[in-house]
Structure formats: structure tokens, C-alpha cells
Amino acid sequence: MPDSSPHSLPFETASWGRRVLALVVDWMASSLVVVAFVGLEEFTRPETTPADFYPLLVYVLESALFTWLLGGSFGKLATRLRVVPADGRFRPMNPLRLLARQVLVALVIPPLVFRQDGRGLHDLATGTATVRLETFRALTGR
Image 1 (cartoon, rainbow, N blue to C red):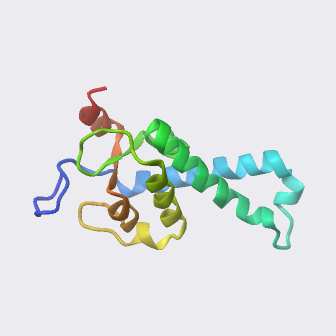
Image 2: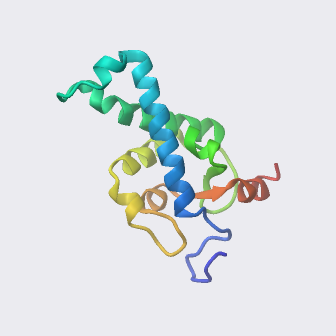
């Protein structure tokens, strides 16, 4: 249920449990993509290699691109979540802002610092909110 503070959203944001699940799905998918390109042997080497950072790069790019085109990363789509403009007016979102949002998520701290309405610093910085599919459909009429 949305809170009634003056800066609250006109809709309810998604639970943190589902968001974490979406992130785990995204990370697993990103890792599988990297394994497909560099091979399992290179990916699992005990010493630090550039391949260790590829899943993060794939995650940031995939989630920004999918959010721009489809309304959510692969993990968000799989867990029935979407990213919407915080004002509730559905319109195409700026891809550079979405890329910045995902870079902030990759920094880890912004999602851990959040307001009572459930929006982290990454959402506040980019004017977005993560919602359940049902809320997304209500906002878009789809």
C-alpha cells in the first residue's frame, strides 16, 4: 500500500524479496552468457582474469537494454516485475538514464539505501520505480 507522505508514489512498489530474486536470475543469466562466450574453463579459473568482470558488464548492459525495450531486465521479466517512471505516467524511458540506473545498481550501495516508498537511490536518481506486473498493467492499460 502506498504511504501517504508528501513525496510518496501514487502506486505500490515491488517487494525487496522479489527484487533480490530478479537480481539472482539476472546474475545467473549473465554468467551463463559469459560462459557461452569465454568457456567454462576460462570462467572458473582460480586466478583473477578479465573474465571475472564480464558478468557484471553483461548484467549492466542487458538490464539497461531490456528495461528500455521491454520494461525490465531478464530477471525482472521472469519474476513479473517492471521498471516504470516514478510519476506513474507511462512513456518510453531515456536509455542513457537507464544505463546510469544500472551502473548505480552495480555499485551495490544505492539499492541498499532506500526511502519508505521502496525506491533506492538508483531509482531516485533516475526517476524510476520497480513495480509488480499487475501495477504495470494498471498504469499502462495493457
